Length: 73
Image 1 (cartoon, rainbow, N blue to C red):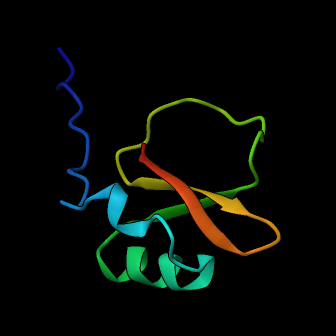
Image 2: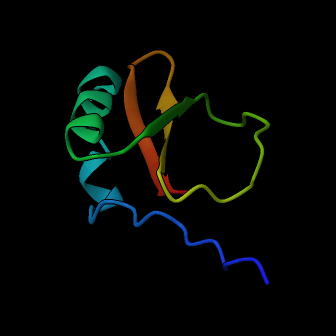
């Protein structure tokens, strides 16, 4: 029987800590904290919903270039 795959453990981080930051600064912070994939999206974007433990998602206001919402996976 094949071994059961294990998912990488995501960094311990608080998504709320990114809200209000400028998008570039938020991305730099996320990468420095260990996030392998940082995804920035415009509000209302159509996205895939598969869960990736190493991904953090930002919804970014296009005019202000600030993070409006952040979620993991």
